Length: 236
Length: 236
DNA sequence: GAGTGGTCTAGACCACTCG
DNA sequence: GAGTGGTCTAGACCACTCG
Image: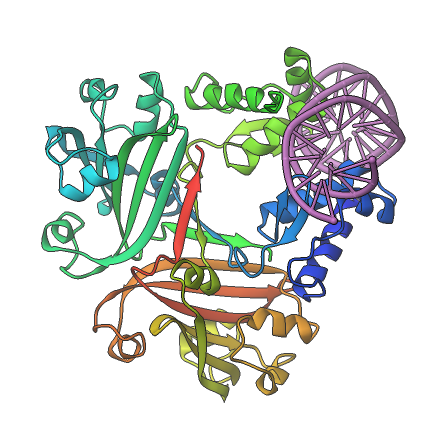
């Protein structure tokens, strides 16, 4: 027996077509949830679900009390998901391996103290790791944490997959993450670690993590350019 | 007046902590929606909303009739959203500009016919554009489409922001997109177009688009490495 | 004050999985 | 057959925006 046709995808599809053909005037809201419910003869929760998905896919944004508005062309290009090392290993039918290169308390480069919101010359917890799949180094991690709370990390199993899990174990929970992605040319030191040539193109992911809106850590990840670390599929 | 505390975030947070501390056995489902509803004294729809968000964030996946299961460590690293050119321009307080470099019917490189699922030697619609913000070239587009349906594109305004909108205008709707992202070193020709040096690190986004599960087009986008085209913020 | 989105309730019927 | 997730209803109260 086939599943009964759902109602919300119909509403969603018609709204999407309205958004894509540009039949709305600039700054004009889409019909309200109540209006959609009435128009399609459904409950408001069902109409709302269609609007929910459009918001999640970036077609509209909502303002409570005012309405739901088209986002313009933003977001339409979709997102790239970052593959974890385990997933890359799975695809390659190989095993992930993590080597700790450096761990301790250190004076970090200036851009790191900046990112952490510290004064120049403040010591931080430093953790560098090299992560491989099979014999192929994939990812170079350079992590820095503010010392309060995190110092106990140094006595933990730093070669394990998830530093995040160690933090949770210390009672630290990360409330938010901000990250950027760039393409950069590798310098000699990092090229050697990743077993490639100087100047090879590489992803650089820089991440600031927060606990309770206070900066906790700053991490940079160098990921080999052709590693398949970023993938995406979406329905526009 | 502050908003009343919502209930679903509490449920979501407790489930997330259960997932992160690994207190579930391998392959064990999280509590069912009905069980959560009973446990927290809420309606099933409210419990479901907490579970919805965890699914959306990649912590769990659901199987109808069976339960909701932890995904392991996949997805946890979040996603990068691709910024549209308009958004980059907005941030830079500048204006976007698109120049059509080449458009017509051509025999494409071998890897393109491969990606399109065509025999070598089949002609396709070719469209190359260079897109800038202010005076700075940001993005080089090389698009290829199977000829049926799309040939009329050649008579349309190809310098406009959205080729997708033109396709919609032709009655073609894209049902799905698959894309990958790599970091590569620029060759001489493309470096010159993007006004940078040979070998400079650059993003290469390759995208296959489908209509009704048939391949419609294949596009490659070269994006300058430090352009701020990829951004992300999420709550783990 | 009228209209909007945000959250929630207490049900319902269904398709599906599992033993 | 018992339990699970998928969808839906017809309400409710609230915070918020706008004129």
